[in-house]
Structures are given as structure tokens and as C-alpha cells.
Image (cartoon, rainbow, N blue to C red):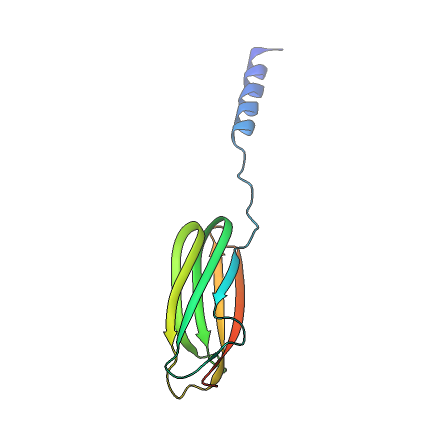
Length: 127
């Protein structure tokens, strides 16, 4: 073989072997709503403990929590941004008087590859 051809093949081999792509992350975060639980009931002035955990095979980048009344109007919002494998939120919401609704607690999580997960529980306020 001639020297220029060997050099060209060597360069091509080194370039293609050295430039491997990272594997694509298609795994969405796993959300766990620890509290409140589905169909829990709360009265006026009760404190609702909201405890959420999101875990990902790589890193969770965002966790958003929204408590919506039956008309989809937010009663509570909370958002956390981080870059860990596990992202935990431990917060509270105090039930105001004159709120009578079935509320939906919506939890959304995304990872650094923009894979998303959503999980909901429904609770009764002032029943």
C-alpha cells in the first residue's frame, strides 16, 4: 500500500472511533407523590403536607407542583430546579375557608434530556 492511502485510512479510523456519540436518554423521571394521597379530605385551616419525590436514571432538572381547583384555577404553585438523580420537595398548603372543591394536585418532572412525566392525585377541600 502506498503511504498517503495508509495515512488517510489511519486518520479516518482514529476520527470515527474517537468520536462516539453518547447514548440517547429516553427514560422519563419517575414521580412519587408521598402525600397527600388520592381522595384525602381536608377542612378549612388544615395544613396539607405536600411531599413529592422525582427520580431519574440521569438527572432530574425540574419539578413543578400545582394544586388546581375544579375549574383548573391554581390554588398553589411550587417549582424546584436542580440537576440531581433525585429531587425531593417537602412543603405545605393551608386550606383557606370558603374553598369547597375537589382539587387536583398535578406534579410534572423533566430530566436534562427533556423527558417528561406527569402524575396526579385528587383531594377534597372543606368536606
